[in-house]
Amino acid sequence: MRGPSSLGLPALSLRERRPSTVEQMDRPDCDLDALHRTYRGFGVVNPVVAGWQLTYRRWIRPLLETARTVTVLDIGSGGGDRPRAVARQARRDGFRVNITAIDPDARAHDWATARPAVPGLAFRRAVSGDLVAAGERYDVVVSNHLLHHLEPAELDGLLADSERLAVRRAIHSDIRRSPAAYALFSAGAGLATPLFPGSFIRPDGLASIRRSYTPGELAAVLRPGWRVHTQLPWRNLAVWDAR
Ligand SMILES: C[S@@+](CC[C@H](N)C(=O)[O-])C[C@H]1O[C@@H](n2cnc3c(N)ncnc32)[C@H](O)[C@@H]1O
Image 1 (cartoon, rainbow, N blue to C red):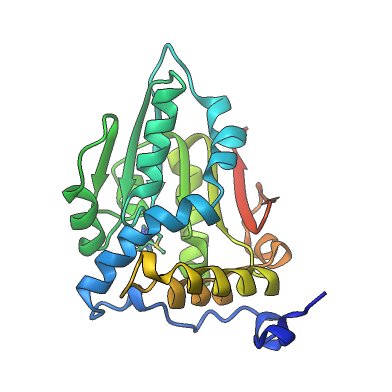
Image 2 (image 1 turned 120 degrees about the horizontal axis):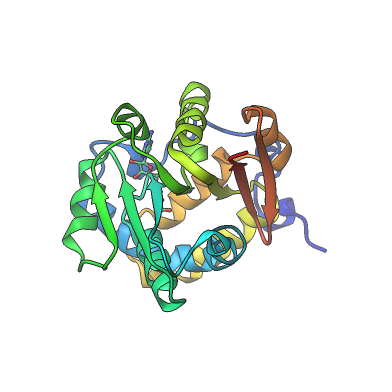
């Protein structure tokens, strides 16, 4: 079996998290056209790599109801393709959901709100602390690809906010760092580059993998009451259930 080094990849560099690796889209001065192409690309890449069909079926759908509207909060929604997909899937399954998707980045908010509206989904420009301060509660709190972006104090704050905001469950889904994930994403995104030319999808995806956690690393930084579930092929889910 070919190892990461035989693929020309930096095997050693994946042994440790690289939180200092910069993602282009996080730079306030990054090219706006490239950022918009990246948001568009997420709509293609997320369904392939992020595994939200599985996450929805195992962790969200069992909490949905037909007789009552269940509220969902998506933190760090970016271009908004995930909450759109979850809202559509829940409605297809016959459930009543109301999803609030928040992101503090004006560029993400403007992009998301410029797309066609989806019933039961609202975008707001905010961080989780704003909603805690306003006393808001949601049945289910989720995020995708947010954990690896955060500094240790921010991560702790996000988890504490999630506990205050979630009435029933919080699920933060993120990439699991591994040489195989890096190699496959590198090759796959390279082949798929014509689908999203001029975007940050490939460099930022690889940077995200370098910044992301192994299950053990993530478990070590979670607050009491949280646990890590791994989901194939390369996901870490930080899950918290209300008692
Ligand atoms: C890599 S993007 C992921 C976007 C989206 N969830 C997805 O999977 O495509 C991370 C997003 O989190 C947002 N973000 C970073 N820190 C945040 C915080 N403390 N609260 C809410 N959103 C945050 C950023 O603005 C960015 O748009």
